[in-house]
Length: 519
Image 1: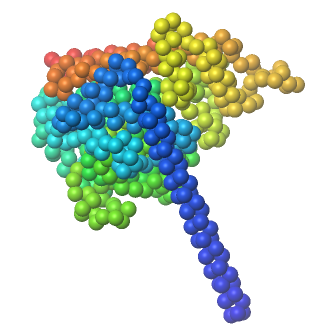
Image 2 (image 1 turned 180 degrees about the vertical axis):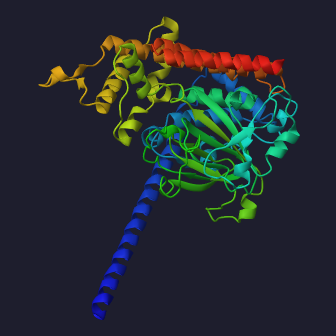
Image 3 (image 1 turned 30 degrees about the vertical axis):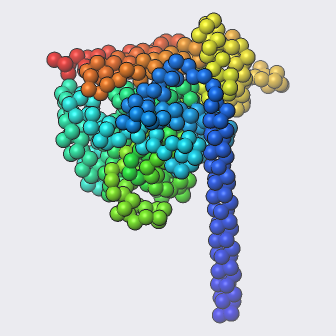
């Protein structure tokens, strides 16, 4: 019996060792693949910068480059704007980024990688600093938010809670309020591109490079914060620029969908993402340092702190010895209904067909949430498509056909037993897809009248900004109202009265609140 137990124990030990070796080998292979893909992205960016070196910029591009340079650096010989736009355009044109990272996995590029592509070490760190930019809030009407006391004192660390930076948004903000809010927690500013000129210019440059609506938020966290933000998901793909200090990021694959909970709004509004039951091992667990860039796909949970040095290269006291400042640049396709799911919803609404359905698998859900081929996802033809639309009022027919085919394939994959696509024996029991004319009408509206209108409005929203001027705050408000009006028109076009009325009410309620605060 004793000999048998020893034999079983030995076999178990051998099996355990074998499993450890296999896990280690798999981890090494995954790390090698990730490193190879990352190197390919860097190579793509360098190639793009070289090939575009002699290309002529538009007047708008040149203006945004100059605005970013002037407002981000006090150095009169700086080329920050040129470096920023070259990098962003190179990333958006990277075949590796589009095929292997966009909506698929996070990407961390170190400052050394970025410097290697642009020969400029300062454009990210100059993009937003506490002394030059955040202090402009003193005496302005800019309002922000900070994490709530229950997060600061550790009472609750698993869901997002926040409060306004000041009690009355109609009065001027003081620097003392910002300093007070930074004691033990994170301070952040949403839609900051409409409030600071350097960030407005960065939004424009990102929009020109990617061809998608953009929005940037600013996050400032002092050292020693155990939970800067709890695990949560966002509706945007984001580029995170670390402009000062350092912050530990953990990014996870999307968890299994939870009934009744929006996968793009997890960890918020009372929902909790548990490290044990909801999240597996992080895809990235690293300290993001000054000058680094992190891409996080939409729906990928993430959490941050300014305590833990997971890299082990520096002592904790040295690594987190100054406030962390990072910019979260959103590439907003889900927010503005620029996905295949929204195209499907719109065409079915307009044709009076049932649009509600139970999506059975996670893969089917994420496939439906893919961004439609606009901007950098449309390939090299996008600029000519937009130019033709502006000059002739027409959307390129071949482009419409391409989007239509992709949409049909997406709809059939979502409901393979609903649509009559091949005239088979059971075709009488199935529905015909909407007509090509129905599809074309929706695609033309969403691209020509909706997406391009949002991009044009953002040109106004992110230009001519001075945080010390009252008209900057008013313009930011008015542009937000115009965005709501665009969404209201989308609801009307989609023949969805509830959506139309929702955005109409939102605009009216904001008007009433603004008028009340001015009295």
